[in-house]
Length: 467
Image 1 (cartoon, rainbow, N blue to C red):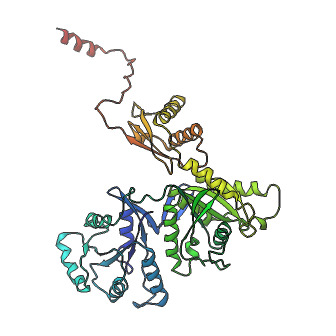
Image 2 (image 1 turned 45 degrees about the horizontal axis):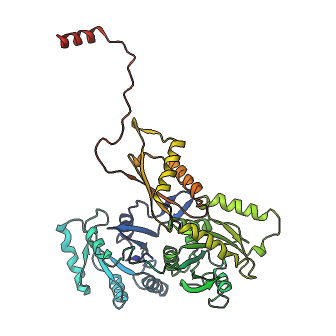
Image 3 (image 1 turned 180 degrees about the vertical axis):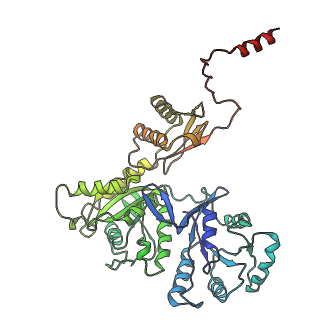
């Protein structure tokens, strides 16, 4: 599970600019994932072969005052509790404020890695501006410029010392990890209770009851599962209590560590934009996914109702076309037991490994069936393909011009892999990489013969050369 690194600070200290630089994004508002519009409060950072979840918390000042309102302090404490690493950002140009001191008082006794950044320091000559901040008693300050990149690598080097590698993050292999995600009041806790067979969770009709992600281990038909009931992910415009923002951190972290995401949808309300957004979070993190249509007992009984609902879901969440759909009632328990059958089928595909020889045969056959187009008068060639990992099945093909392969052709190759391997209910990740080797390994097409007749001037030149 990825570590969550949260940025804290007062407004206009440069947190969003820092967020954009670290996530290598120029837009802190939306993410142009096909079919999904996503608020950019959370982003993945990859540095030195390590990755973590970065959280831009926004400014915490109330309207016209620089004092702590009760809800603001609650928000800060919740965010610091949910995050694994705390980053306080100061404004090097405007200097220390009383609010900076209040922030420092909050984090001083928290036993977590803490980093203190003085932003807007864009050259060594301006590092003198950080001396004023040493009066806070902090041991080390990082002078950085989020806008120009000054000092960013030094900061990331220090952060990555607290980020485990993928090998260190490996957990139990004999347990299937399932996260239940969805909008508030969709029935996540009720479903968890029904699965566990006991009132382990607090169930309430008030949206937002669950603040934390709660893990529960269970056994079913001889197999072990870890069930994670997460907080509801509410649409940003509907978040009145700022503390709910940090419940989303928990939910996203749960998706990071899970194998299968049960995307719970309130069937009585239909498919909403927020349902699609949550599905996008699961797809983006490479989870296996199952759409669970809850409260089906409240839907009008019609022989074609399920088909209409599923068709609408497939249309709106087309990026998860491989995810199976099941209708249940968490309240009555109808078809809840069938969820495990689907989980096992999805996980079997999700953890599949294909031999290198078979992967090469599939790609070579696909290329022969549908020849890729030329690029700058050169033929696109697929030299070698292999599966590099499972969970989810991830494949790599080495190509002479990877950037020239159109996304539609890449999608064609993924579909060929699905067809030949039976991976119908699992995400499939496919990368294209540049082959490294001897120069001249790419074949250039022969020049076309010219139909122009040689001019008299050209003939005279050739005669002179012969003489």
